[in-house]
Length: 506
Image: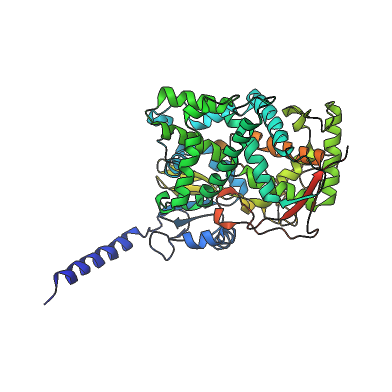
């Protein structure tokens, strides 16, 4: 006689079997080649996550320049031909490029919807960035960042060699200066109150540790794991948000236009509570730091490891400072370069581009808001279903040997012609439009990209000007990239690299 528990077990098993059968998508005529994967729901997620570049190259060889993979319950259409990227952009009316990003932000940071379509604000976050981080709005940001970088890095007032991890150095300097640039300071630059300055520094150093703890599990949160599983990371997120409560921000001087406008929108157009408002600022903090920090490390690492790059960069920095009538001194007077002067540094531009090319692994995502037909550059047409994802993976372009000779080798002047102008790149004899994409593409392009490049360029200019620097191990190998963050942007090093520095003798 069958027991009740056995019957229920049999029912559950049958239901699971039918769920598995029904969840397997069948490729319809006109759709891209399809791979469901062997694992229910996850599909190809584990294979993709282990090595995205190799996974996509293998599928491209098997299926061609467009194919569909089931990844964690989503069907993702990968377009790998860079000549077809423009075709994807032209179908913008069929995509909701904000849906995925807003949903991810809500889940990871714990705030309410930022989507203007939901009535939470009268403008999108993308529009907010465009208004406050591009064009003339960059001027105060660039000026404040230049001041804050020097305030932060010149705390060391000794001329003896000092050793430190290079990533730790970049993290500390860039985070502190960037934090003060966005969220202001509780003291004026000429404030003589030492205790107030030390309290401010302690707050930011504590924020750095909380940021590291929270950012460490960021990939898991994006993948869908609840933050409450990670108690220390949850605590770190809440601590970061508490520092960014409006009541605390109102005590600070020289808050950036980005944060001031976000505060105004929070106060006038949302029904969020105080912590939820603070978490919208935390999202902006993460967006401003998470990719800039490793990008700064890689730029400085490759600069230190390449004598030719250091020589060319040093000469360029000297010429630009001289032209701007800026003289390096150690009497408390800072040097300043405006954004137009920073834009006239093609060698540093090329070094930063090359460093980011080698370390970026972003995933450009667009969600189909309706069924439509995608027509690519090669005249191929493919049916796309509503709620499917169309994705570009720029690393396939960045490390393509047909586009970049010796693609895994750092060449500081790769993006420059012999006369110092910006170089064009080609594939199969055709000029490429999309050959460098660490900041995304089309409407999904990072709106803060100009400031990000400016602040990296500022740090390189300042360390070249103020410090003698060298790697402790002259021929140190480049540390491997942390593939756990693939898809999120610039990959971090799996371990730090020791360097030493001291103030120059002027």
